[in-house]
Length: 267
Image 1 (cartoon, one colour):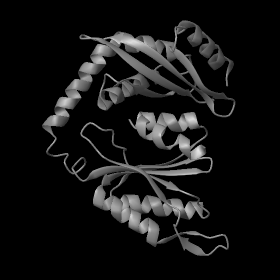
Image 2 (cartoon, rainbow, N blue to C red):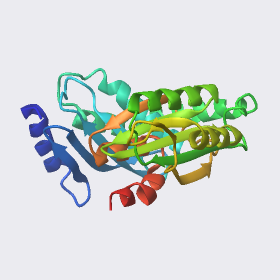
Image 3 (cartoon, helix red, strand yellow):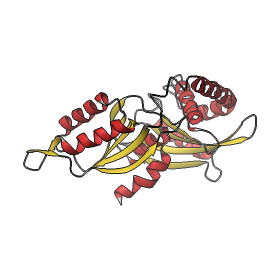
Image 4 (tube, rainbow, N blue to C red):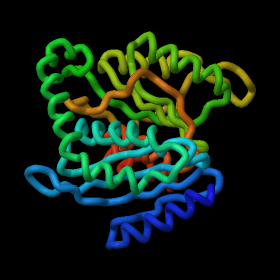
């Protein structure tokens, strides 16, 4: 990590020195730094408690941090709106330490951001009928685990092809030996995906012969509710730490899913 980033972490720990205000989650020369800041902001009606998780890549501050926002008092849509506002602000602060400035900016502009979020929610409700194909009674989120991939490149191409053809969004996630697939979309399409996953020869065995997926497990499935965050398209991502993977789930509003199922996979 750069000397600038290390100095900023020390400064943040001093500024947010009250109990539970600052928590260092992960730090390494290879993976960067992940930490959480808890703040209280004043809204028009009540004080709102926020948990802000920042992931600083090794090249920070030349690149903006990844950020997740959690609050028990706000909806997932509102938390996502705050995150997007912070990322937009961060893009204007590159090359300089920015975390404290981002937190102060959020405290000063919180009400405007929430009002913008409320307007967006109203527009979503007005167009709810037109969006029924995206979020309907048959739309689900499913988390799958694969045991291994020997023919990795071919396997990934096949998964991306199925997701595209079945109009499923989500992520194929790699963290060390852990392989997870997050799928979102019509439940019948997800069922068809699972059938393909189990019946088509998608990998090779230890002798190099084509084989079917026999060790896939379904970790979690849940009905998508109005206001839940929906992945945009389908992407493949590799993570270098559990903290980074956790941040991804938090960004998607799936913290509970992560806490209940992912850490146990490493026990």
